[in-house]
Length: 610
Image 1 (cartoon, rainbow, N blue to C red):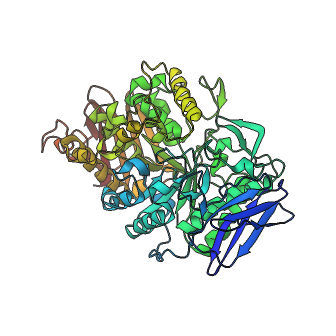
Image 2: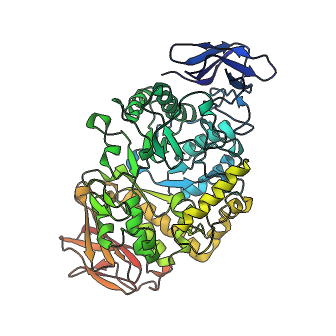
Image 3: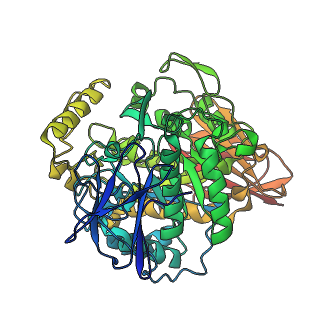
């Protein structure tokens, strides 16, 4: 595949840009006269210079006479409208040579927005919290998009340079330092990337080539051209962006935004191409690298291999799990998720995965999805919160601001004991009370007006009684920063320890390290109680996780399996802020096994030999 951009090697730099419909192209280096570039039959303009080093600023001038930043720029030190800068990726001194990644089934994700995770709002700020994250027990940081976007504050989904690291976060060296430091602590690093659209401000791709097509429509405008005229160069551009993060930044994997909005009806699907090229690079680098999809299709083919007709992703987000549980935790959630509300849907989310697997869905006004019952659990990522679930509420409310302390403990157990890969959203582990809003920092006044108005209209559909905060207002961004002093408050400290204990259990109990659906069972008791059973691969160990979402205690019978049930954790114990005093209740259940679970409580029991 052809590498575009400025690619520096000791003593020389090769510049390449794809512009198949342009007649001429010049390279404009700061302080020099423009240099003519040579065009080949595939539409790539190239030139190689021996007196250009790292830090050199440059632009490309297509035959229309204007100069633009490099579409494959690796660094935009002055933002999306400024010059691109040559980067020497060999200059960084990595110390993670022994790092080969973590097995997919071991991953516990923690989603971070770089700008609001710490007061500094930088990669360096995240590094200062790595010991905290390691102590929490998570082992995979998932960064919301860090590709260059307009201004200094943004969720990142308005990115316009898929190869460049945001200048205000710390640039290329800052991200590499974070990855290197995380690997030293045993933490993998994933990036959230956006390949389904490019933000409006600073999007200079149309000045170079046919990157977009009106053959398909997306919520953000024309789709990326993956199968039309001149699409080879577009496929090459985005495929190489994936390889770029893997090779140059030692990233452990990517979460790919809204893959259902990437359309390709060609004989070789774009994700089949990516799978092939990644396979070659994995062999050469010898490190794990995973692709995780966000997809709205409820389709098993996303995580099937290309050989079996799939797209080759190693995992995908399981939105249905969130929706099914959330409406049980907060009945107001039915207004947002009208097709959810039954505890049996939550049970199906545990045993099958997709809740909507071909049923009629009122929201969509059609049947939706296919069964994922045979797909192993480590092919799915589950969560109670993420940037969308929180940030797309008018008040940016986290779960901690919507449900009781007891129900937060239930929610934590629900995902950390699930036969899936769990993900926490930053601050969730201690019940953070700071909101997380949607925010931007555009420079175009008309664009700002459209964003503000569009946000207001979006919330009108949910019948909110107030307008969302102005995304452009810097105070909206400042309010979204985590307040780490909250971890010292009594309830928050208990919730943090609760998460830590659940994570330790997940990492050490053999039943929680088995992801085959045959070893997952669920009993539904009434309308507010569910028992999740997890068995180890050798069938010698079993956990029973009893969830009571009701407002009264319940007595739940347990199977007589020739073993003894021993209580491991009870959210009702005083240790966890519950009403049971030390010594009350039995940890060993004798006779006909049964367990009493307090209102809005969860009890976890281990089955051991008598």
